Image 1 (spheres, rainbow, N blue to C red):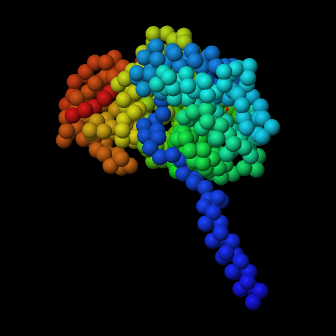
Image 2 (cartoon, rainbow, N blue to C red; image 1 turned 90 degrees about the vertical axis):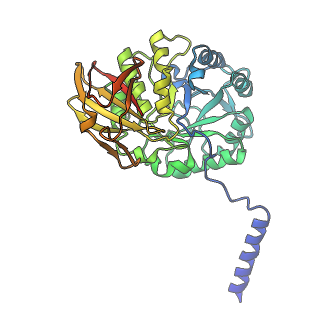
Length: 409
Ligand code: GLA
């Protein structure tokens, strides 16, 4: 009898909870329809680290328009770590009043008035990596503030998360963003520790696959408890992740270092490879002071088109010989991008006989068979047509540089 009473009470409580709208149910799914091609924009971290304030952000928003980057597709102006001030007596977060005296809503309004979108940064743990207040325990309040300010993109980091489970922590912030109701891109930044490519696609729009990049083409910097990685090291760490990327959910090999000090040929190779692997293209340099060469790289529309291809298929390494790698990316309308990447410190000749090299991409279910179909070649960096696949392609690839071809029927 006692048992029956117990069951009935339980049943009544559940019915009551549901009739109240079931306040406990949360939506752990990201906003759909965002980032259908890899997000493009700018982020403050790589160049400015903690030195961010509203004047810098406004100047960068002006520069992204003035330099033609907005026209080339860059949309998000993302403020990384260290914008934070303190939480108020109710726990709501506010920006640092010295650095952002006009407040975040005014800054978002400014950015939006330029036809751009605004991103902010937080962390799943108690503190951000830069020691500012993290969102742990304040997820729903933080999401409400971001929505109120008009934020469009949240990068959510993974420092100081002792005892947390990554999947659960990221689902919590997703639920909070859902509850706040303003569609935002969620950029998962847990460095690939807990295989975010497995659980990330429904929770966020991109996930970092590695630790932090730094502006070196082929090196590792050891900081003791962590390392930062050069461009080639990060590229190698993308191995095996191709099948997880697609429209709305991208592998993120970290932000661009183009314009931060590497020579032009290395910057070009970096930008090309990020385009080939369908990476978010988030510039990380000072857009107010760019050389002609840097602008030329960041705004090359034909290269960007490869990155932004609607099919959203991540490219793959087809072959590697000596220091030269051959990469391919299937594109819509039966096009292909083909890149010869020379990682070495001496120029290398390449010869690629399309007729004798039929290529099958099992993942994308695509075939590049020049014996059956003739493709026109376009050399996209020098912006010149380069014959067809009837003839073998011959070129010399300068050291740590690329030749990128677009194949179309
Ligand atoms: C981590 C992230 C970086 C950057 C810093 C900020 O290292 O991986 O991209 O956001 O934190 O402190």
